[in-house]
Image (cartoon, rainbow, N blue to C red):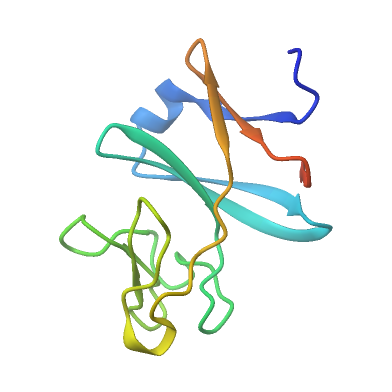
Length: 121
C-alpha cells in the first residue's frame, strides 16, 4: 500500500456480516479501542469512548446502536450520538463529539487513514 499512514481495519465483507467491529488501537499515544460500522451505506469509525464516563459504548451490552437503529448509544447511561457526526444528542454532553477516525476503502478493504494511529495486536 502506497500510503504509510493507512493501517488495515477490516474487509467490507467482515463488516457486512456484523453490526459493528472493534479494533485495539493506539491513538495519539493512548491505547483505546475503535468501533467500525456501516450506517446508511457509508462506513464510519470512532474511538470507542463515551465522553461522559470514559467507557466504551459497548461496555454493558454487546451493541452500539439504540433500539431504533438510528443512534449510537452508550450502554452504560444511554447517551446517544449521531452515527454520521458522532455528536452527542443527550443533554449532559450535548454538542460534544466522539473522536472520529478516517477510513479509506480500497478494493473492498477498509484502512484507518490516521497519522497518529497504530494497531495493537
